[in-house]
Image 1: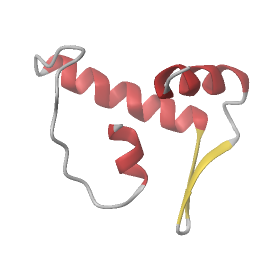
Image 2: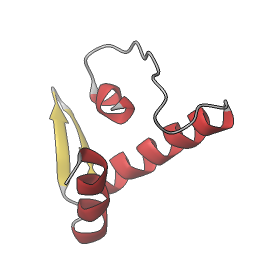
Image 3: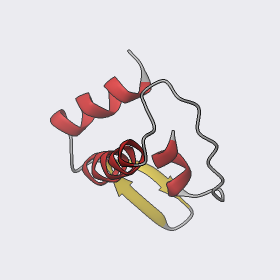
Length: 68
């Protein structure tokens, strides 16, 4: 199972469970899934295709996990 499949499975089974804690910030599987989907759609709309390499510069934060 890869990271994407794991996220989808947990989103379906335990959407309200906290999956990331970063300092005083938390995010649930549902929130993470929604943000990842939004980011993926943004990339797709920019013409980025599956399997492409994309450089993303973000500070150590929950946003870093969204870009994975």
